[in-house]
Amino acid sequence: MTIRVVLADDQALLRSAFRVLVDSEPDMEVVGEASDGAEAVRLTREERADVVLMDIRMPGTDGFAATRMISADPSLAHVRVVILTTFEVDDYVVQSLRAGASGFLGKGSEPEELLSAIRVAAGGEALLSPAATKGLIARFLAQGDATDDDRDPARAQRLAALTVREREVLVQVAGGHSNDEIAERLEVSPLTVKTHVNRAMGKLGARDRAQLVVIAYESGLVRPRVD
Image (cartoon, rainbow, N blue to C red; front, side):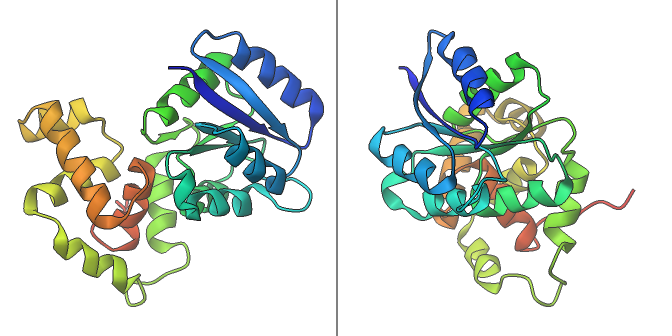
C-alpha cells in the first residue's frame, strides 16, 4: 500500500525538496502541498492523506492549530502528523504531542530519517528525533504547566478502566520502548503486547502511541526521573 503524504510548509523550495525525496520512494507519494495550516487540513481531507509533514511556523493557521484540527476530526482518525521544523526546542516537542502529533523531527535530519519517520508514523508508532530526549519530554509533560494537584482528573479516572497488565504496558510505552522490547521486559509475546497497547488506546481514547505517552504523564501514572 502506498503511503499518501501531504507537505505543509510556507517555503516552496523546501516543499519541492521534500517532494522529490518522498516521490523517489516506491511505497509513498506526495498527494498535496500546503503553504499554511488551513490549506493542509483541507488537502488532508480531500486527498485522503495518511501522513502530514507539518511545519510549525506558517502564516495564518500555524502547525499546532492545524494538527489539533486534524486530531479532533473523527473522519481523519487514521491520519498521522509529523511535526517537521527548524526550531527543535523542548517546548515545541511537548506542544506537538499535546496537539496530537505522532512525532517531531528537525529539518536538519538526514533524508533516511525523514523517510523512516513517515513509515513509522504511518504504522501507528510514535517517533522523536535524537535531540528530543525522553527525559526532557517526560519532565515537560509532567511539570511544564501543571502541578501534582491540578493534573487532568478525567484522564486519571480513565486509567481505572485499564487492567494491571495494560497499566504495566502503558508505563513501558511511556518509556519509549518498542513492542519487542516490552515483550522481553514483561516476558510475553510481541503480539500480546500489541493487543494490550491497542486495548489501552481504545479505553483511553488515544489515537496512537504518542498520545498514550501524553496520557501516561499527564495523568500521573508515570513520573519523570530526576537524574
